[in-house]
Image (tube, rainbow, N blue to C red; front, side):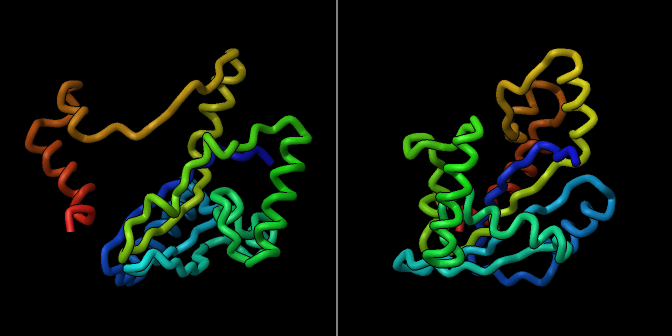
Length: 180
């Protein structure tokens, strides 16, 4: 089975009181074939920086068995305690032996460090189904991915895609939670 491009998205929350809106939207995207949530974790960091982790997912039972705790392994979080750390290390060693690049300590993205104390984050590992045909066409044409990233709404003004007011509103909407 071809897997689409995979992305880790980290969303921060002050005083999270989830009422199912995010899960419902992810389920809608799944049903439409747009994205698949490979794994999802909710991480709460208390005022002292102590971490609590809860597994979130809309995977089928079969997919959950296939992917396990992918986010935990990716960011080095031993969600299954010592067994999780050992399993992550073994998976990384096997991937490296097969020629797959594994993050070095210098390259690692310390996701947990980026989460402010006394807040929470949802860590979503998603597969972009919509991008599979595009990626395949690029590969067929001899192309390859060099880089990617999200563009701030403020940068879209210069391109004429948003007015200054629309960009300001979109930027404020994206950053509203971080200002608390």
